[in-house]
Every structure is written in structure tokens, then in C-alpha cells.
Length: 343
Image (cartoon, rainbow, N blue to C red; front, side, top):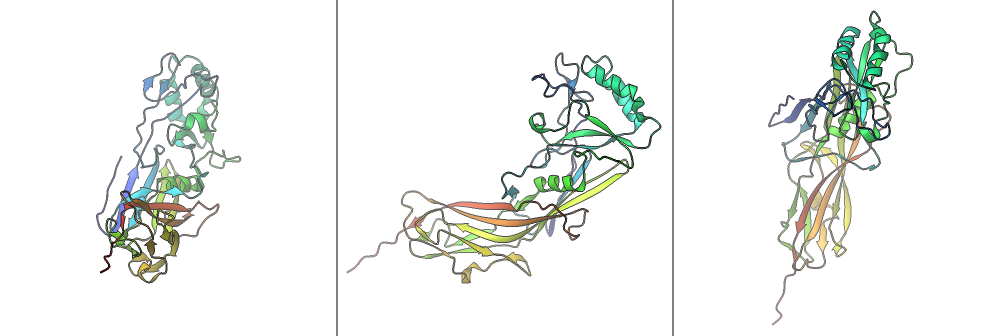
């Protein structure tokens, strides 16, 4: 894995991550132990080997062998958190096909990986040999790649097609082939967003009952984008997800506050996206002391996420849309009651 980072200006981290070739021949077959070929350690009597997790970690899971991630987080280089989709039902791809072998390379792989293999791997290798590996045909063998270990439950690829033959003009593209749309989903899943740069005035340990608490932004932040791309054996494509901050939601953490929640719209300024909460009517006023405990104050930024079908974040937005994302700042606050003495 390669990483690099610039400390100031545009925080940029390029990640090239990989996972070993995996061929599973007994997944979902009566609960049998998955059998693999083409990489790592033997799985008992399954007749195959399990792929090692050689992939780098993107912060949200592992990515396939030839997909590069390029993250851009302009601003001061503060704390970031993985994007949290507003739509909790949204899930990124679990597995997909990406280009891997020429016919000659595939023949060499099958013959070396399946030499002396037991069933069902032996039948799988025989099937490919009878197809003559498509030697002499134009095209590539594409292999399955996994985002993380959930593929055993959720991967839609069957035990008969862990590699597929893809000609230059594919008349019926497999729905699991990597596409710009799938790249956009993987880029979304790998996106890291700045936590809201929030400062409370007075500070969190000095809040007072009936005294307005100003929620101020400290520092600048701007839109964030992540590019997922592949450029391997002549297959080139990319997608870029672009997250733009649109709103700040403040939650006081108690019913005894006025208001309990509020939302500020964010607008583009000279130093990034800002909101002037000092003049807003939504400064939080706590009406009751937190006693010997605290209140869980929270501020969340909602990010509008779009995607382009290239490495250009300023390209035209594509469909279907991606869910909005959230980044959150949380802090326990202490609210005290000032006792006055009447003479």
C-alpha cells in the first residue's frame, strides 16, 4: 500500500490497495467450508486455499486488487471521520468483477493453482480447460474481488463464475462488473469527512443556566471528494464522489434547553463554508443545571453527495444519486446555576 499526505492546503491521500485473487468453489453449498484457489493458506480438505487479506485498509474496509483511491480534504487537516449515510439502508458493493488475466495468463494461473486439486475445484479447472481459456480471442478474464469478509453472506456471484470472460464488445454485461457507478459507491464508502469545527462560547465546562451559548465555527472547511479509479490491462474508468456541506444541526442534549435542536444553513464564503451563529436566533440557552452530570451536546453536518463518471470533481453530476452523508461532533457539557444572594 502506498500513502502520501500534504500537511497544508489540500489534504490529499492516495491509497493503492489490493487483495489476493480469490476463487471460491463451495460457498453456499450446504454450509461447506469455502474453498479457494490462487493464493494463500490451505483450508483443510476443502481442495483449495483461502486468499490472504493483502489489501490495504481504506478506513471502511478493503478494496479490490486494482482500484486506487484518491482522497481530497481541503482545509486545515483536522480530525476526519468515515462518512455515515443518512439512508441507513444504503450499502456499498460487497463484491464485483475487475480485469485480471489474458487468456495465456489465465491458463497458467488455473494449471498452477489447481494442480492436484480435489473436488469441486478439479471440475472447475476442467471446465476452463475445455473452454481453452479463450486463447486466440480478444478480451480478458475478469475475477471476483471482495470489499471485506461479508461476501460469504451477501456476494451474488455463484460458485460457477468466479472468473468471467469479457470480450471487447460485451453483448450482455454482467451486472457485477465494475462500472463507474460501482466505483462511485466504493469511493463514497471510503470518504472521510471533517468533523464539525465547533467551539462553544462559553466553553463546555463553564455553561450557565439562562445564559445563551454561542455555537461558533473555528477554522475553515470545504467540500470533500474521493476518486476511485482503475487502469489495468487497457481497462480505464473512474468515478469521483463530491461531498458538499449544506447544513449544521445542533442538539442541546436535554429537553431543558431553548431550543432543544436547531439547524443552520451553510453558505460558501471566502475561507470555505461558514455559518455566523453569533447573530442567529438559534443559540442554545440551557434552562436547568446538569447537576452532578453532563448533557450530551452534539453538532452534525449534513453533506450533499454527488458523483461524476471521471476523476474530475467538477464534471457533470451523474445518476442514480448517492445518499447524503453526516459527520458529527459530540461533547459532554456542564451547565451550572449561578446562585445570587439577596440582601
